[in-house]
Length: 447
Ligand code: MN
Image (cartoon, rainbow, N blue to C red; front, side, top):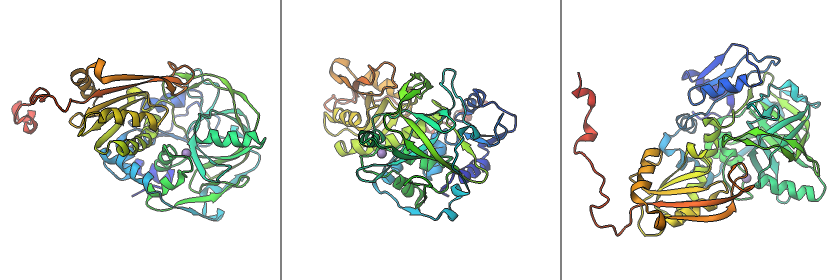
């Protein structure tokens, strides 16, 4: 069964024993994040009692590839292909009336962020941060919607500081700011894993990420009109914040503990002024503890989907891609190909670099190497690669500003071809094997 709301998904997790309810009172200052991090990859947590707040908080709803496979309805190995297919065959959205939208059960015009249980996650964070909010905005030129997740710092009861990396939203904001106009935005909180995944897709400009959610659901995504903004928001969300990105306003945002496991620094950033908050009658607040597997995987799978599509355009015999957890699920990619022509590994590397600014190191291996096993990948580099011939570096391309080794985003890119040369003499690269090993059950020989 496909879940189209956070609540449906929580019920699935509950039935599988993955969702645990925390009845002990927790503090929004560090304690909630610390407990969430401890449970990362094992349990989803619903904190029922928050000091000073009446709304429960969930975290860790998608902390493993297995859970994301369950949400998508495919085995772990097919997740990336499945996501790529959804992106290539977008689904539909259905506009519903406010009466049919749970997120309209409560409507508040004087927004007070203090009424929401927004945690402070890491030691040096500049304050409470909304981390699981999907921001929707429209391209001011074409009207096409865009979804993205941003770190959002609570600056005052109705203002948020936002980090906008140079992607689609930054283009929209630049266009309205140049005309001295605000950009309308809405931030949906409390969503199912498929909509969260859809929001993270690597798409060309002009692509409405809502339509990926429709494809993943296999049924239209229900949207409803905003109260104070000309935007459609997910009808099944727990909470929606509406507001405007203000032109020519910058306030200090940060520091913030980010997915690379370092702090993104404090600096003047754009500001969202909130104009309304709508929610369910008894909303659940959702947070993603930064740098947990939940955070990394929600970004990794859509990126892998986009990456696989792009590489296949160039190297059709690509078998799989993996953005490794050690590489923060953003910077380091491993690609498996069934090499037919010499040089394909390098072409795959170029395609990977072009898929995302974030990709920094790319290793290409043959299809016999398990790209999810770091020992296998290292073995391929150790035994199938000569650095002078098989490693190349492109200096000072655009990378990711959150990588502390970059020069304010300028970053070197490295490609490693760890595939066996096609003209290697027979037998030279033959993997050793013991006949029958795969059939042996050790227990049969012990005790
Ligand atoms: Mn986009």
